[in-house]
Length: 128
Image (cartoon, rainbow, N blue to C red):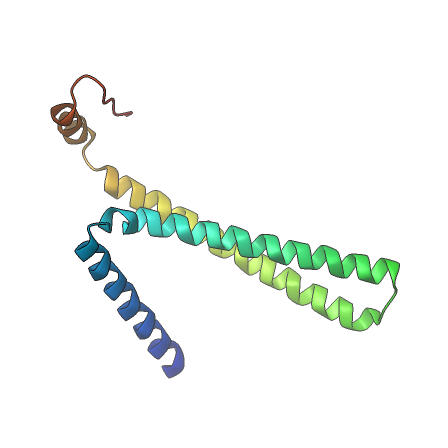
């Protein structure tokens, strides 16, 4: 990993830590649990991938209808295809991470069920 990437990763980690501290102070730390953050990443990846597909269809339309500078459009299409493949691989990676995070958060189902029953014994049901 290059110095620049390490420095960027360090800044992002520090910003994330500050965000979590501020969320804790505001009493909204449950909105920034690891599972919620992973879900946010997946939503962002899906949104960006959708934008890539829209751009790809626009370029294909431009190439077929207008016939403008096909070499440039083909280069752009190839780049978009590589970005789409990277986004799909990243999505699969984050989806696996989300699954692991949810399994960790779920913890012992018996303890979770007992705690839920103590909070509201008549209305709370925990799925196993």
